Length: 210
Image (cartoon, rainbow, N blue to C red; front, side, top):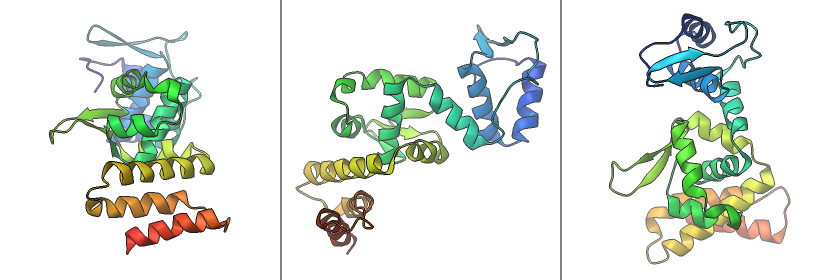
């Protein structure tokens, strides 16, 4: 995954001990070490860069969720937000959808750079297998953790923006998108608040669900 012929023995041992043989966890640990600058890729070799040559001193997460969270936290703020917005859209998303619902207009012109960085880090990658270019989260767990990093109010607003985007984009034939519309309108509503606006959003979700 790192594109190297070999890894230093301390790195291999560290990954085996921490991941316990779990393939995805092993990958995420390796990527996290690269993200942190502890493991560098030089030509086709992995090089360990630490003061004492070992990894025992590292304050490193013990779970795959913790490792993914640490990787997300290392992203710059605009790229983090792009990742979080994409996580609300779903496990797959298009550039157009992401661009149109992104809440920070000033960041939209840099979305290609953000997506390039996410692809470089193997967090979300481009997929053209079905003709239409789209992006896919490397693992649903990455999407779930990114989604969980948003405040509930942020999630509801983004779900509403996505639902409105779906209604407008597919106005001529919404039938295939009814499940998605029901999902996003339902997540946009804060039923506990009980406001008339939230009840209207819930009614929309029920309409598409029926």
